[in-house]
Image (spheres, rainbow, N blue to C red):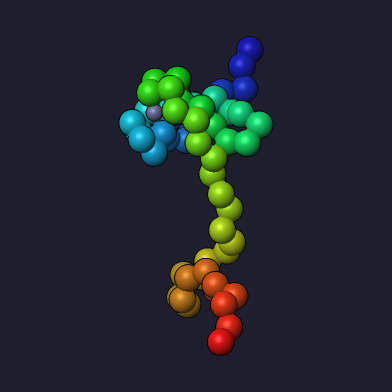
Length: 55
Ligand SMILES: [Zn+2]
């Protein structure tokens, strides 16, 4: 049995042969490893993620 999740797509080769790593995912089709960063919530009817940069 595996914990493979096929709902993710590799951002480089668009394959779904992704396997979880400690800090992200590895693609076993193009042999790249990458992480997915959570940026925050977005509101569909408002401006996107608040940057928090205040002047
Ligand atoms: Zn790939």
